[in-house]
Length: 236
Image 1 (cartoon, helix red, strand yellow):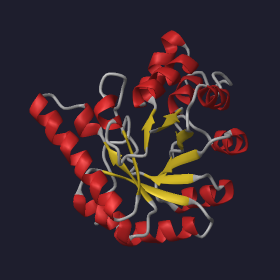
Image 2: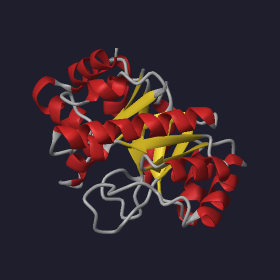
Image 3: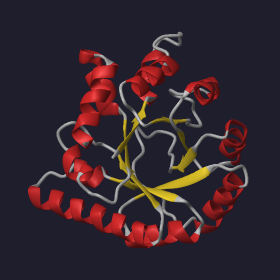
């Protein structure tokens, strides 16, 4: 299974002082050297961590695959069209959220999302949609023309009881099966860490996991290369 490392919180630390360090581009290089199969960043409207310049430099330096998470806005489509990353993952975005709070409502916003997917595809950008593990949303993602889905694992990762955990894990598995049936690329992520990742990693249909906060938090104590290598080992 492939590992995409989200380096947003390297930039969060940098922006705390509005300085130059730590550099997300440097972090991306170290992640790749440690075995990461891709680099993910979320370019937010408020630029709270990743900046436009970061995206431009990452496009030039990432040797694996650059995945940019962004809202489905005209501003972001223009940026993606100029940068042309390997993949754009469309995510919902609320101004005051601490982190992404849930998946896209593809059904409710199908016309707008379809238009955004079409515009990005015209620039040779692969489009994935971040969705909750719902059969209806998976079908809707296929209908609007997305090439892949990233299944939200938050309900599984934050489950308070074993019954809830099992139920949420089953929902992810069923969503992956539906996506596979529709010939969509299958990724997953959100709130995964070193303690809970293995059951998700054991699902054969999921091709890649995007993990960020847990790896950056671990890197504070052991260094980013070791943190990435340890996570990569769990995925095997």
